[in-house]
Image 1 (cartoon, protein in one colour):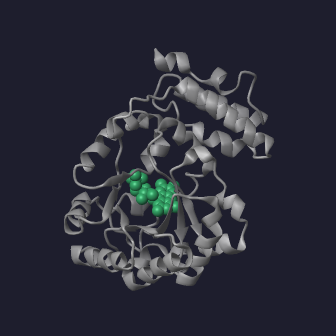
Image 2 (spheres, helix red, strand yellow):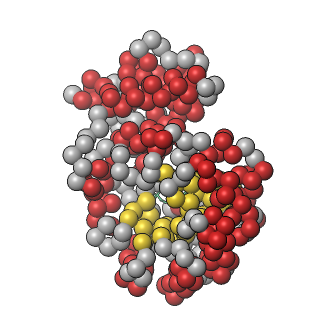
Image 3 (spheres, protein in one colour):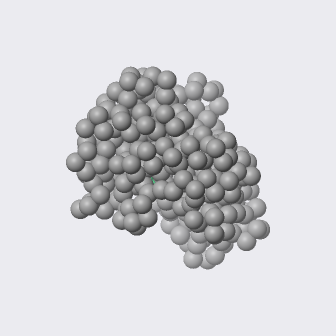
Length: 312
Ligand SMILES: Cc1cc2nc3c(=O)[nH]c(=O)nc-3n(C[C@H](O)[C@H](O)[C@H](O)COP(=O)(O)O)c2cc1C
């Protein structure tokens, strides 16, 4: 998620769940080719498994961008065919590519031929007047024929005009049964559903029908509510502890500060950690105060956290 799943938030999430796969913000092909790759690609080894999401509508540029990213060792490269923002539409990528499955197939093929990476594809169930299942199924069929094996489907269609990106994440209704149907029709593919999944329990219910779930906003809004995910979804006995999490994040933060990372992006992922709990508001205020002061008080994050209240 843009402005959300940067490396610092991903590191924090990795302290909440060990098993989930984390996704980067979307990075546009030309940004990787002409920009500052370490700025967009560096990550902490603890983040694995971690996926890089690419925005591209051009097979040649996509292949070059993936070649740039290759030495970083991402576990997956995902193509964004779901974003309806006007800027992305103008660039000829994102959800408008759903109308051009052959083009997406060319991208998948070119990337594989140049780099050996089999891209995964994130898309919607449709766009504009094409909300019919046949349109969706044809898209998957054509792209799968080019070698893609994993499809992450945001289970609502997008309107390319008249709705801004935020409204495009709430107004079109969720249609998870369409994604379930894809799994039935393409049993050999890995089908992942996405949209409105608010808890590990809800995720588990979807997993009866599909191979995976992707969670966006609920991870940002209530990261700690996913602390039971490893146990509920993988049967992992490990249960994270918020004090230990804060101690490890503090050590991470100090390492990044020493490298010259500003405090703000390092504290930003922490704001919702106690959301809805006793002391949650005071925690946010304390983080705000640290930002104004430009440093954490002695004792660091653990000293600021309402741990006693939260555990009581
Ligand atoms: C702030 C924000 C930024 C997002 N950025 C991306 C992005 O870069 N790439 C992408 O595929 N989806 C992006 N999305 C969409 C989410 O990945 C997801 O498909 C959508 O929010 C529905 O899932 P959710 O209900 O679990 O959030 C973004 C969503 C939000 C709220």
